[in-house]
Image (cartoon, rainbow, N blue to C red; front, side, top):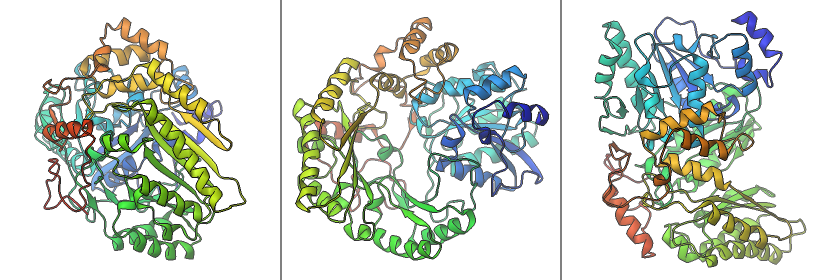
Length: 581
């Protein structure tokens, strides 16, 4: 393997993706009972930026008797070289054949990665479907955000981990060690695994409840992390402030899935930040959460970390903010910074429908504060195609852009203000109040995008938009069932790989894949009735269907639900003593 690999690396783009040996690499030679390979179904620079897999990788390597290695989806040129030389897909650390590991895990981040699962299994020499794999193959499990509805890819896996991996992955690995010590079969292991919280076994179709970490201060968080060999998407260290979101935006799957809200204390975060800065050599530290400005001690935290980062000459990277909680004090020293705001909708009426819980006054005062302190670049994010949207709502997006320019002129700033407006297409996602909605057609998507392209022909304003065709494929797989697995395999066979990279996406191939696999995909675009059994109903993700239906009806009435920072709204996710920070 090593000799052939040297020749291969001379013939591929970015060979640093495949060599391993990064700074802070854990001990791969320690005595162990279980070797796990964590696979990320995208390229190295994307996978190395993912905080979830980073946590799990270091957690397992800090577990006695366990060694964990990594495998990322190789780019197409590397895949060609592996096939040419008759080599299987290998782990980064020790260059082991992936199918020789005791347990294989996949992180599935979003719908357009589904064909990459099949792609990687093919390169490993592992049959695509779990039912076709005997005892000679290790259990293959999946986790990640897409397990909210795992059904479209469930047939490829022996088990799917629902919820937070610090809990259920560690329990699953411990169980597998125990079962191997007792020489139990894979089937016997899976029967036991199905009894754990957050472990769905597709062959058993067992109801399961999402696994939740109760105390983030006690939860594992690595501070001596791998430093990559080449530039990655998010090339910095990060601390996670809290999980969950109190705001209840009705389109946002993550806001419901990661409930209940749990935070880390300021002292814990400052300690973790200092250790990361000292252990990595990164020149930038980020703050992570779904809504960082809702962290109750944000000003105190930023002040304390800034003292430490200034000592080390490290930049503190602040994330995008909610418009109603912009803290100008935090940015007073950040003259000329770029700021990102997400109004999501152009009018107050539509913001009430989606429960954005920001007012026109919030927008005005927040933008005024930002522009007062010399911000040079403003990014504004919106969603088009939301339920009840009209042309007036689209015009509202244009009006907000004009408002930004008017405020900037009021301050008489000499430098030009650059505005980037970005729109994504609304996709009805499971575990949201809009999970029953229909997906708007490609024609409607294009009409809305054309309207905005014309209206946003404004000096120093750039408009970017998410592709209509890829949004349709994402919508199909977001709410699909197990019948879609055949279409995923067929699409891969037709050449659909790395579909999340726009240069690789081919809508016509997907349409052909649905046709040749005889898959009825249209029904997943048309929406569902409230009384229908949904493909993901067997999974208890915490928030109750009753609550989601109530929120849907409030949406159509234009009634907002207050955030749950002060009072629990009874969504069902609260399994702790309290559900707010």
